[in-house]
Length: 255
Image (cartoon, rainbow, N blue to C red; front, side, top):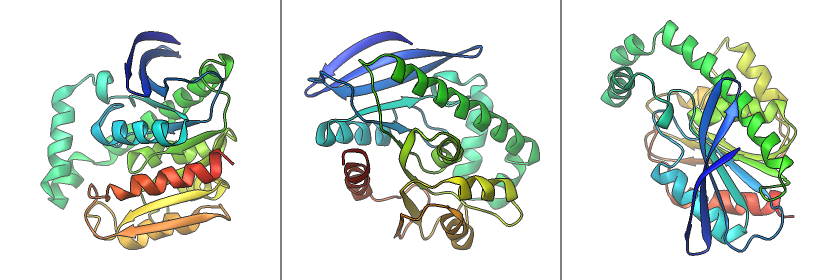
């Protein structure tokens, strides 16, 4: 891992880095307590679709976790997101389709080919997160674990299979995602998750039905899991759920 720059803001240090992973150099950020003198627990944050590693909600949650729990936080740009976008015009068209509220437009832009590309990128990104965990553990200045995952929407698309495969993830916050009928591979991955989970759902989510969202919650193999349901659309998760996430990680990473 190569640190690009480092800045301190109050009790939080922010380090930008690049992570060699296969043929890619993946941009990332590590937030950590300014007075950290030993390895610490770390929360991995996976951003949502069409977002990036330092979008407002990621930054706010990261700073809260560092300040209130004394843990480290890491975030990466997913493939074709943030500093890794290779076709800005295509990304703009997809974002416009997602924001339009027109189901027909969404089906046109996010057709079979686009969904297949998303699945391939998800597989790549899970591998990149595992490379990051390896790097964190090799250098005790970074982290020794345990590790947590926080990611909703696309953050769950990437974080759920990572949690299912990698036993270094000890607790996870998922949500804004779904299990659709016939998706047996996704159901198997959900069943393989056996760590404590906090699951966030929006009751009026325009991108998925209540039934498919609850089906994913039900499919999780965890014996300790908590469901938080709030009214509102996909991007209207209340900010107070950040406090619930902090409390969740306090229980499961610091005990």
